[in-house]
Length: 270
Figure 1 (spheres, rainbow, N blue to C red):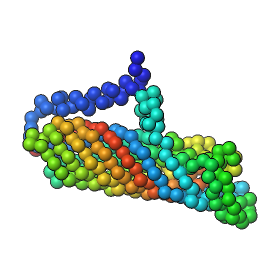
Figure 2: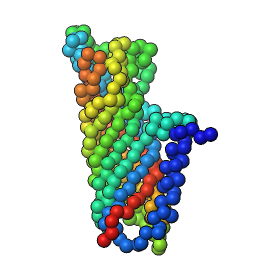
Figure 3: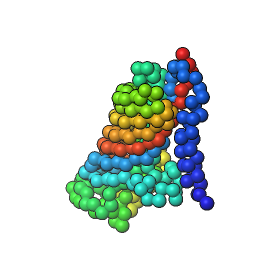
Figure 4: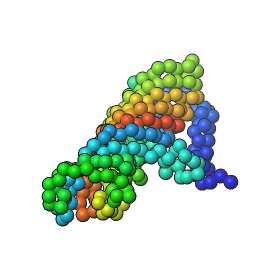
Protein backbone atom coordinates (compact mmCIF):
# COMPACT_ATOMS: atom_id res chain seq x y z
CA UNK A 1 0.00 0.00 0.00
CA UNK A 2 1.37 3.41 -0.96
CA UNK A 3 2.10 5.73 1.93
CA UNK A 4 0.41 9.13 2.16
CA UNK A 5 3.32 11.13 0.72
CA UNK A 6 3.67 8.93 -2.35
CA UNK A 7 -0.08 8.96 -2.91
CA UNK A 8 -0.21 12.78 -2.82
CA UNK A 9 2.74 13.01 -5.19
CA UNK A 10 1.18 10.60 -7.67
CA UNK A 11 -2.18 12.41 -7.52
CA UNK A 12 -0.48 15.75 -8.24
CA UNK A 13 1.60 14.28 -11.03
CA UNK A 14 -1.52 12.69 -12.59
CA UNK A 15 -3.34 16.03 -12.51
CA UNK A 16 -0.46 17.71 -14.35
CA UNK A 17 -0.38 14.97 -16.99
CA UNK A 18 -4.14 15.07 -17.46
CA UNK A 19 -4.31 18.83 -18.00
CA UNK A 20 -3.50 18.72 -21.73
CA UNK A 21 -6.43 16.39 -22.35
CA UNK A 22 -8.80 18.22 -20.00
CA UNK A 23 -8.07 21.63 -21.49
CA UNK A 24 -7.82 20.58 -25.13
CA UNK A 25 -11.59 20.73 -25.38
CA UNK A 26 -11.48 24.51 -24.83
CA UNK A 27 -11.59 26.75 -27.89
CA UNK A 28 -8.33 28.06 -29.30
CA UNK A 29 -8.91 31.77 -28.95
CA UNK A 30 -6.11 33.82 -27.46
CA UNK A 31 -6.27 34.31 -23.71
CA UNK A 32 -5.90 37.51 -21.73
CA UNK A 33 -3.54 35.91 -19.27
CA UNK A 34 -1.92 32.68 -18.18
CA UNK A 35 -1.60 31.36 -14.64
CA UNK A 36 1.12 28.83 -13.90
CA UNK A 37 2.25 26.80 -10.93
CA UNK A 38 5.10 24.39 -10.35
CA UNK A 39 6.65 22.19 -7.69
CA UNK A 40 10.08 20.62 -7.47
CA UNK A 41 13.28 20.09 -5.52
CA UNK A 42 16.62 21.88 -5.24
CA UNK A 43 20.25 21.68 -4.22
CA UNK A 44 22.54 24.53 -3.10
CA UNK A 45 26.12 25.66 -2.65
CA UNK A 46 26.84 28.49 -0.20
CA UNK A 47 29.57 31.08 0.11
CA UNK A 48 31.62 31.21 3.28
CA UNK A 49 30.01 33.58 5.75
CA UNK A 50 30.55 35.42 9.03
CA UNK A 51 28.07 35.25 11.88
CA UNK A 52 27.93 38.04 14.47
CA UNK A 53 26.73 37.21 17.98
CA UNK A 54 25.40 39.78 20.45
CA UNK A 55 24.61 38.68 24.03
CA UNK A 56 24.84 41.85 26.19
CA UNK A 57 23.75 40.05 29.37
CA UNK A 58 26.68 37.63 28.97
CA UNK A 59 29.20 40.30 27.93
CA UNK A 60 29.50 38.76 24.44
CA UNK A 61 29.86 40.63 21.16
CA UNK A 62 31.91 38.43 18.86
CA UNK A 63 32.07 37.07 15.34
CA UNK A 64 32.70 33.66 13.79
CA UNK A 65 34.69 34.23 10.59
CA UNK A 66 34.56 32.38 7.26
CA UNK A 67 32.20 29.59 8.30
CA UNK A 68 31.66 26.78 5.79
CA UNK A 69 28.09 25.55 5.24
CA UNK A 70 26.23 22.98 3.16
CA UNK A 71 22.66 22.05 2.27
CA UNK A 72 20.71 18.91 3.23
CA UNK A 73 18.89 17.75 0.10
CA UNK A 74 16.67 14.99 1.46
CA UNK A 75 15.22 14.11 -1.96
CA UNK A 76 18.24 11.94 -2.80
CA UNK A 77 17.46 9.43 -0.04
CA UNK A 78 14.13 7.56 0.17
CA UNK A 79 12.06 10.40 -1.28
CA UNK A 80 8.82 8.39 -1.32
CA UNK A 81 9.25 7.23 2.28
CA UNK A 82 8.93 10.71 3.77
CA UNK A 83 6.64 13.73 3.47
CA UNK A 84 7.03 15.55 0.16
CA UNK A 85 7.75 18.80 2.03
CA UNK A 86 10.59 17.37 4.15
CA UNK A 87 13.29 17.50 1.42
CA UNK A 88 14.50 20.81 -0.02
CA UNK A 89 11.51 21.78 -2.12
CA UNK A 90 10.36 24.85 -4.04
CA UNK A 91 7.24 26.19 -5.67
CA UNK A 92 6.37 28.97 -8.08
CA UNK A 93 3.00 30.64 -8.61
CA UNK A 94 2.92 33.15 -11.41
CA UNK A 95 0.73 35.04 -13.83
CA UNK A 96 1.56 36.13 -17.38
CA UNK A 97 -0.39 39.36 -17.61
CA UNK A 98 0.97 39.91 -21.12
CA UNK A 99 1.52 36.46 -22.69
CA UNK A 100 2.28 37.84 -26.16
CA UNK A 101 5.21 39.93 -24.92
CA UNK A 102 6.16 37.38 -22.26
CA UNK A 103 5.81 39.46 -19.08
CA UNK A 104 4.76 37.90 -15.78
CA UNK A 105 4.85 38.37 -12.03
CA UNK A 106 5.64 35.49 -9.70
CA UNK A 107 5.73 34.30 -6.10
CA UNK A 108 8.94 32.28 -5.82
CA UNK A 109 9.61 30.21 -2.67
CA UNK A 110 12.59 27.95 -1.97
CA UNK A 111 12.71 25.76 1.12
CA UNK A 112 16.49 25.55 1.34
CA UNK A 113 18.48 24.14 4.25
CA UNK A 114 21.59 25.87 5.57
CA UNK A 115 23.82 23.84 7.89
CA UNK A 116 27.09 25.09 9.34
CA UNK A 117 29.57 22.32 8.58
CA UNK A 118 30.39 20.24 11.64
CA UNK A 119 33.98 19.56 12.75
CA UNK A 120 35.55 22.74 11.38
CA UNK A 121 38.05 25.07 13.06
CA UNK A 122 36.75 28.63 13.00
CA UNK A 123 38.28 31.98 13.83
CA UNK A 124 36.47 33.85 16.64
CA UNK A 125 37.17 37.56 17.18
CA UNK A 126 35.57 40.20 19.39
CA UNK A 127 34.42 40.35 22.99
CA UNK A 128 33.80 37.14 24.97
CA UNK A 129 32.83 37.34 28.66
CA UNK A 130 33.70 41.03 28.52
CA UNK A 131 37.24 40.41 27.25
CA UNK A 132 38.73 40.93 23.80
CA UNK A 133 39.65 37.65 22.13
CA UNK A 134 41.19 36.44 18.89
CA UNK A 135 41.13 32.66 18.97
CA UNK A 136 40.11 29.50 17.14
CA UNK A 137 37.05 27.41 18.03
CA UNK A 138 36.44 23.81 17.01
CA UNK A 139 32.89 24.21 15.72
CA UNK A 140 31.15 20.90 16.30
CA UNK A 141 27.99 19.68 17.98
CA UNK A 142 30.05 17.51 20.31
CA UNK A 143 31.86 20.69 21.41
CA UNK A 144 28.61 22.58 22.09
CA UNK A 145 28.35 24.40 18.77
CA UNK A 146 25.86 24.03 15.94
CA UNK A 147 23.92 26.36 13.68
CA UNK A 148 21.00 25.00 11.66
CA UNK A 149 18.48 26.58 9.36
CA UNK A 150 17.44 22.99 8.78
CA UNK A 151 13.70 23.56 8.58
CA UNK A 152 14.55 26.23 6.17
CA UNK A 153 16.66 29.22 5.27
CA UNK A 154 13.43 29.80 3.32
CA UNK A 155 13.87 32.34 0.52
CA UNK A 156 10.66 34.12 -0.56
CA UNK A 157 10.89 36.36 -3.63
CA UNK A 158 8.42 38.49 -5.53
CA UNK A 159 9.73 38.27 -9.08
CA UNK A 160 9.34 40.01 -12.37
CA UNK A 161 9.57 37.44 -15.18
CA UNK A 162 10.42 37.80 -18.88
CA UNK A 163 9.86 34.88 -21.25
CA UNK A 164 11.83 34.40 -24.47
CA UNK A 165 10.46 31.88 -26.95
CA UNK A 166 13.24 29.68 -28.35
CA UNK A 167 11.19 27.12 -30.28
CA UNK A 168 7.57 26.23 -30.94
CA UNK A 169 6.31 23.30 -33.00
CA UNK A 170 3.79 23.85 -35.79
CA UNK A 171 0.79 22.78 -33.70
CA UNK A 172 2.14 24.31 -30.50
CA UNK A 173 2.39 20.96 -28.69
CA UNK A 174 6.08 21.46 -27.95
CA UNK A 175 7.55 24.75 -26.79
CA UNK A 176 11.01 25.64 -25.55
CA UNK A 177 11.38 28.87 -23.60
CA UNK A 178 13.99 30.70 -21.61
CA UNK A 179 12.76 32.68 -18.60
CA UNK A 180 14.71 35.42 -16.88
CA UNK A 181 13.61 36.34 -13.36
CA UNK A 182 14.61 38.92 -10.74
CA UNK A 183 13.10 39.78 -7.40
CA UNK A 184 13.34 40.69 -3.75
CA UNK A 185 11.53 39.53 -0.61
CA UNK A 186 11.77 38.37 3.01
CA UNK A 187 13.51 35.36 4.48
CA UNK A 188 11.56 33.22 6.95
CA UNK A 189 14.17 31.02 8.65
CA UNK A 190 13.73 28.28 11.19
CA UNK A 191 16.48 29.14 13.69
CA UNK A 192 18.16 26.43 15.76
CA UNK A 193 21.62 26.85 17.28
CA UNK A 194 23.99 26.36 20.18
CA UNK A 195 27.04 28.45 21.13
CA UNK A 196 29.31 27.31 23.97
CA UNK A 197 26.64 24.76 24.87
CA UNK A 198 23.85 27.36 25.23
CA UNK A 199 20.95 26.31 23.00
CA UNK A 200 18.16 28.53 21.77
CA UNK A 201 14.51 27.54 21.51
CA UNK A 202 14.02 26.48 17.85
CA UNK A 203 11.54 28.74 16.07
CA UNK A 204 10.40 30.30 12.80
CA UNK A 205 10.67 34.06 12.35
CA UNK A 206 10.87 36.84 9.81
CA UNK A 207 14.61 37.19 9.75
CA UNK A 208 15.71 39.66 7.10
CA UNK A 209 15.60 39.89 3.33
CA UNK A 210 16.99 38.36 0.15
CA UNK A 211 17.26 39.18 -3.52
CA UNK A 212 17.84 36.87 -6.43
CA UNK A 213 18.08 36.31 -10.15
CA UNK A 214 17.11 33.12 -11.94
CA UNK A 215 17.50 31.65 -15.41
CA UNK A 216 15.07 28.90 -16.39
CA UNK A 217 14.83 26.54 -19.36
CA UNK A 218 11.18 25.51 -19.73
CA UNK A 219 9.86 22.70 -21.92
CA UNK A 220 6.07 22.77 -22.41
CA UNK A 221 4.27 19.67 -23.67
CA UNK A 222 0.77 19.77 -25.20
CA UNK A 223 0.50 23.46 -24.20
CA UNK A 224 -0.29 22.91 -20.54
CA UNK A 225 2.18 20.59 -18.77
CA UNK A 226 5.80 21.65 -18.40
CA UNK A 227 9.19 20.68 -17.03
CA UNK A 228 11.73 23.33 -16.06
CA UNK A 229 15.37 23.41 -15.05
CA UNK A 230 16.49 26.51 -13.16
CA UNK A 231 19.77 28.05 -12.08
CA UNK A 232 19.55 30.73 -9.41
CA UNK A 233 21.82 33.17 -7.58
CA UNK A 234 20.56 34.54 -4.27
CA UNK A 235 21.93 36.89 -1.64
CA UNK A 236 20.32 36.64 1.81
CA UNK A 237 20.90 38.92 4.76
CA UNK A 238 19.69 37.70 8.16
CA UNK A 239 19.35 39.87 11.27
CA UNK A 240 17.89 39.77 14.78
CA UNK A 241 17.82 35.96 14.79
CA UNK A 242 16.90 34.96 18.31
CA UNK A 243 19.55 32.95 20.14
CA UNK A 244 20.25 32.22 23.81
CA UNK A 245 20.05 35.61 25.59
CA UNK A 246 20.79 37.53 22.44
CA UNK A 247 20.66 37.81 18.66
CA UNK A 248 22.69 36.74 15.64
CA UNK A 249 23.12 38.21 12.18
CA UNK A 250 24.88 37.05 9.06
CA UNK A 251 24.72 37.10 5.27
CA UNK A 252 25.63 34.66 2.52
CA UNK A 253 25.33 34.00 -1.18
CA UNK A 254 23.75 30.92 -2.73
CA UNK A 255 24.01 29.12 -6.04
CA UNK A 256 20.98 26.90 -6.53
CA UNK A 257 19.85 24.31 -9.07
CA UNK A 258 16.16 23.42 -9.33
CA UNK A 259 14.03 20.91 -11.23
CA UNK A 260 10.24 21.47 -11.37
CA UNK A 261 7.11 20.05 -12.94
CA UNK A 262 4.14 22.33 -13.46
CA UNK A 263 1.04 23.37 -15.32
CA UNK A 264 -0.14 26.38 -17.34
CA UNK A 265 -3.76 27.50 -16.88
CA UNK A 266 -5.21 29.98 -19.42
CA UNK A 267 -7.24 32.80 -17.90
CA UNK A 268 -9.98 34.67 -19.79
CA UNK A 269 -10.29 35.30 -23.52
CA UNK A 270 -9.66 38.27 -25.76
